[in-house]
Image 1: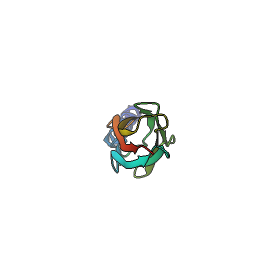
Image 2: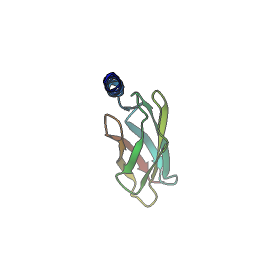
Image 3: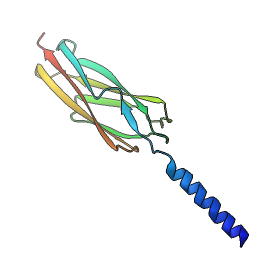
Image 4: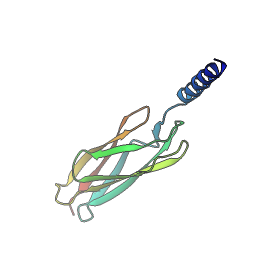
Length: 128
């Protein structure tokens, strides 16, 4: 009987400790990047968003989806340990697009407390 009580107490303590830890949590350095003006002669621009896992569990980016095919996100596939940084590289390709202002979104889905975050890129592609 003492063994059963001891095992139950150990399980309870283990579960309490596991539940007391904060889950993963993503914190971006910034959510929007403005490329400013760039020529349609050089229509491809890239920016790298950086983030930190401020939680206490490993952070996993499950998905990064752009609002259109002209924008391509690349992201760290490996879990990010608590306190470590990761990157999401976003490339906009304005080739074949009309010059002018654009604003695109990238939806990030994680296993963290905040499951969905939106990043934005914008800029002004000028003629020649």
